[in-house]
Each structure stands twice: as C-alpha cells, then as structure tokens.
Length: 284
Length: 210
Image 1: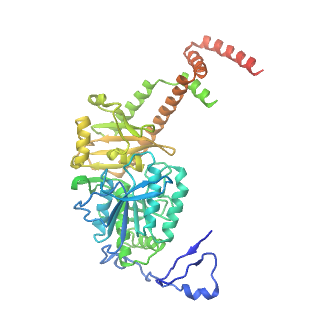
Image 2 (image 1 turned 135 degrees about the vertical axis):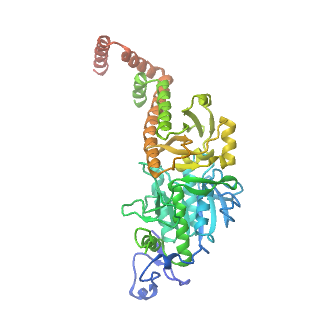
Image 3 (image 1 turned 120 degrees about the vertical axis):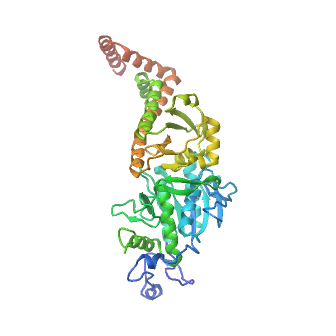
C-alpha cells in the first residue's frame, strides 16, 4: 500500500516519506512544535476567535441563499453521480430543499460568525441512491480540504460502513474534522460511531457554548440541541430539537478553535474540546 | 423453497386489514403519548421512490390515505434520507411546508416531531406527531420516547412488509398458491378436522419423501 505521511510541521517543502519507518537521519527532520500550551483553557482556545479563515462545510439538504441568519456562502454545490458513481459537483442553484441544512448553517454562523461556510447538498434528489450520493459527496468534500465538515445525518446501510470509515480516516489524516450527529435510536448507523470523527448528542441547556464531554462513548460530546432557534426556509426562524442541531454547535466551536490555532490536528482538536468542555475545564 | 414457505405462511397470516388496524393503533397511541393533535405514518415505496400516506390519527383525514409524494419531499423526506429524528416548532413560519401541506390536507401543523422508522438497515417510513400542546416545553426525554416508540412501530411495519411479500408469492405462482390455500384451509378448520387433515398431510409427506 502506498502509504505516505504528509508534513506534520509548517515546512511547505516537506518530502513525503514512507509511513512505516523512520531512519535516524530523518528524526531531526520531523522535529515538531507542540501547538498546545501547558494549560489548555477556554481563554486560550476561544477568546477573540471568530472562525475567520476556517472553511466549514455543511453536508446536508443545501443552504438557503442570503438567509439573514446565515449570510453569504463561500460556495454551494449539489452532488450527483456519474455512471461510475463518482461525485459530480455542480454549482447549487436551488438552495435548500428542506430547511435543515439552512438550520445547521445558521447555528454555525451564530457561533463562528467569520467562518467560510460552504454548502454541499447530498439530500433531496429522492431516497433511492441517497446513500451513494452521501458517500460520494462526503468523499468529494474531503478532497476539497475543508477544515470542518458538519454531518447532521447518518446511514444505516452496513455496506457503506467500511467505505465511510475509509473516508473518515482519510479526512482525519489530512486534517479535515468530520463532526457527526449521534443517533438517539437503538440502531446501528454511521459515521458517528467512528473514532476518527467527533460525534455529538444533545443536552438541555440554553447556552450555545456549553458542551459536555461524555465519559462513556461512542457519543463523545453533548451540545445544545433542544429548543434551538434556527434558520429555516423563506428567511424564517423555527424552534428545533435534535442531535442534528447540536452537531453544528460543535462544528462552530471547532471552527473557533481552529481559527485561533489552525495547525491543530483532529486528534489535538478533540483533546482541546475535551479540555474546555463544561464538565472538565470549561467552567474554570 | 423460501417462496413456498412464504406462501404457506401467507395462508395463515393476518389480513392486510388487520395490519391497517395495527398502523392506526400506532398513530393513535403516538398521539395519546404526546397529547398531540394528530399523528401519521408515511411508508416508503421502494419501487416508485415515493412516500405513501399509510395511517393517520384523525377521522377527518382518512381520505388522504394512499396519497403519494416524492420521497425527498419536505421534512419527512429529509428524516427518511438522513435517518435522523427532528422536532420543529413554529412550522407555520415555513412558507414552503405550509403551502405544500395546506394544499394537500387543508391543515398546517404548528409543530411536528418526525422520526424515521428503521428496521435493521432499512428505512421503512416516517412517523410524525403533529401539534403537541403549545404550553408544554419539549424535553429530551420525549425525544428518547419518540425513538423507542418508532422502533416498535418499525417492527410492526416490517411484519407488514413480510406479509405483503408472502401474499405476492401466494397470488403469483399457481403451484405455490395451491399449497398456501391448503395451509389456509387447515388453519380455518375446527380442532378435530384439522387433526384429521394434518394426519392426511403427514401420510402424503411420507409417500412423497419415500
């Protein structure tokens, strides 16, 4: 397998090298800065952060153009499949077909106002084949080097689980953070169960920046997901409940952290989120 | 052989009407649990890629049963595709939803809970609960309850799907249907005659497998 490592330093001229060995001569070449301070707290992670410079993708039903709670999008694409089931990404002229993607985008915008928001529409063209479109859309989104991909949805198709896991691992290694809704029903679904993504359930508090680390995964964090005022179709606002509205809260918080500390890997970001979660160090 | 088994099963399965009663019971209970104004079930028709209005807990909307819409339509379509339950209040603010629903039903809900009906890896449909009491604040416990109840409903729907498949086998092939008719006839007999019939069948089995 042609596994290669990418630069883990800020050196743009890094040579890819095999991942399975490290010669003595190379040890010096991979000297790394520790991006984390001795004490990680909310002030270090969040103070002054606006999400600026962070690319956040909403993989969903589309996003309504110029919704007052969402504002401008940096890009909007609709995914369809070619004959080989590869993604075709067209400029999205339709916006949101349901309201849900707009809601997610609005939650992210409310937390990370300067983040670059992208919409990648994978739902709305019918149920048949929606799993394949979702898969191809996620793969395409990972290729676009978004920093954060918000996935307030899941699939129960077992045949897709390994493919999704591969995509999630690829994203993890190229520093794209997938934030995925946990299922609150007793069914097997993906990709939220994978350790390479950040999975999110709901809590009942009203504060959008309050979130809790779960000591008993696979759900890793609980964010605000109950009675949330969210953007909806027609420039409107509705009150919504569900893990799918808690997920963009964590995507927004991740965008804040990454805008201050852009070199964090998904592993480090998850550690920071743990450190600043409200039941760990977030209230200190 | 599985088709034959299914056909025999179809001979003794409850009728479609009984499953209709079951679906109505599900939506009635869903409405009662959440003190809601209404509840409905959309079933997913895989062949046509449509959602079919299959049950409703409201006497004046029974005429809507059988109504079809594309599987990607609105909130129910999103819930089906994303396999994710959601609760939306102030839905009358949604101009598209209001227009679409009002055109079809004449009734625009203020709020709805929508949950996918999932069995194994398949999405069978969507259960909706319409207009909970406006003075009661929604809690995550209700969300859990909705998920649990939908899981139970999905088991019932899976039974319905199996029965339809079996009935398809019954009505399809002549030879298989004949066996199913025998099974059904046996099932309807009183105990003495059924015992006699089974004894005869055992003898037949002995002759055929000798």
